[in-house]
Length: 176
Length: 402
Image 1 (tube, chains in turn cyan, red):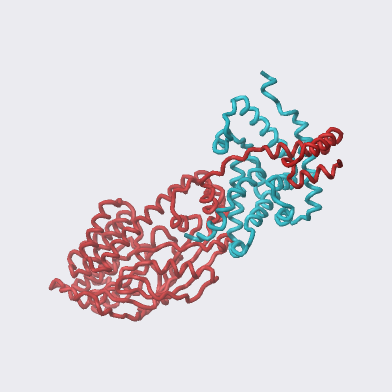
Image 2 (cartoon, chains in turn orange, purple):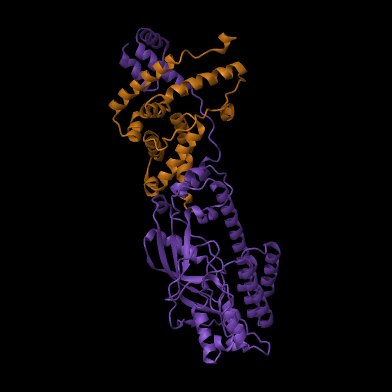
């Protein structure tokens, strides 16, 4: 009843927002918190939101700030994605339990490594991997393309080395 | 193939589109460059990360969160969505307080859900109110031979009978901005609010929600000489306040649930009262009475419910000219308020005292005005009560003569 318009403006972009938020935070409940915070902030700028041609970019910019500024810096016990989280997205072709367990281990390893990055590095990787152009990334982060490219490169190298340090993705097949 | 070439493939999202020849060159470079190899590996794994499905309630939750003050957000937003928008606006988190204000007079009535500010001192003289009799009211009640119908009157209750909480303007809410609006309005002989205008406000953003809310409020119309009449130039003040940021108690969740349940009950009660008001406005007095019968069966005796219902009966019977039943109903209502320690929204003691006065039972009138246990102990503060008291005093009926 308060502002139906707000819902109309935001709803189409929620899936993209949630996706990026999940990449930013690495778990569903924190991702929901980020989306929520974005909506709260966006709500105070309803007039702006209404006039934007690219509301999605603008919403992601807020998500980026929310995450990088660490609004929710308070430590929470790490929440792992569970198998149910993925039920709706499971790809066709029944994976064997081993394959599933393997994928979960690899994911855990990636999320652990991501958690060790600087927040900004992680945020840049999360936004970039969604396929946004550098023009869009500039709008979201207020960094120039050159800076973005340099930082992205460093972030990737760092993440790759962290992954290597975590050891090769363990293969259940080998263990068996 | 250089590090820059590898970076640009990654930057431009071209991994999936590489031709075999290009891919071979890249692999060769990766084999000899640890950094590029790490970057490549990282990107590949990032691309493979599965994203869980978006929770279906995310939008509702986000919208809900965007309407609540900071302090309540995190905990509230995780609650299941079980309540409608109207309720949220009125929930304690965004406490909207309202107070009635009529000319220089005093609010004494208070609804159970809303905080009233302390009442200022009572004016010496009763306030003259413009009264506009309405053409098409039903014929004046016949009376019962005991009561002087021309003396039967009921003030417009200071507090509206049905009151919808105003929205908290989202921008103001997000900024934790508090505010108030003072409004002027008329009430028709059917109890509807009309001609709402803003006298003054702290911020114009609050004006729209204030006008919208007030326009939906419903009153029991004023009665003069036994007939329902319109009144003009009423004033009320609506204030928006944020709840405090104090650390909530450990059992806050439980308290929240309780408060929301109470709020739901209150809104349902308002809806039911509104149905009775609709029937009354349509002159379906019998229908209104049946609606009250139904409510009496549904709502608990505890709290203010039965007091309000019986007060409404009293009003209804007054409109019907059935003054004996009106007096019984008002008495039952007052007893219910007193028994349950509830505060009255409708101030039934003044109409009751007036009925006694109209049938020349002056002692009973005075005793009613002096009834103990009235809210705040300031029972004589309404102008109507003062006016009646003065009439009684003029007839030589005072506390000393009882």
